[in-house]
Image 1: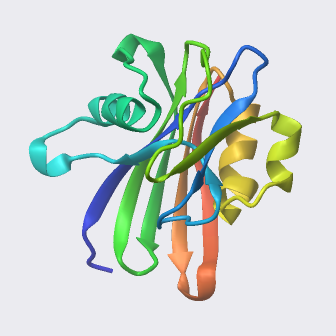
Image 2 (image 1 turned 180 degrees about the horizontal axis):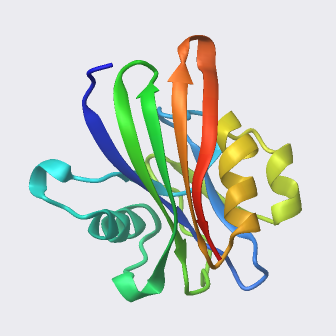
Image 3 (image 1 turned 30 degrees about the vertical axis):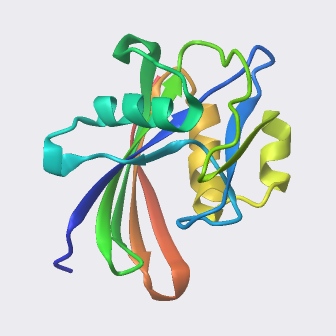
Length: 164
């Protein structure tokens, strides 16, 4: 399907107890769901995924990070997501520990959660079934996965590469 490509980033911040920072989103996409901070890369300005992640970290959490404080943990490609675009999503684990929970943001408010509680939360299904299992299983390494999005919210995922 001939659709535009969009590029996004997701940021995984962990606190001193290894709990994950999530935002309960007030806006679409994922309105009402718990998601990590992140957003679209300004490709029209030539922004790189790393620069987009750094910008999003500052905009949403107030934290000024350096590229050396990010670990590229994963890459996802989504083919024909909602029949509107093909997505490339870069997943970054923040290497430094979260010093405090960020204040509320216009897009939502933040809270930290232990890993065992994530699947009990109201989170996107792809996070529940694909992203979190891959992220935690290959933490410190790298994974790549591709999703062929089908009508009726059917997602055909396949892992393409894992580096330990």
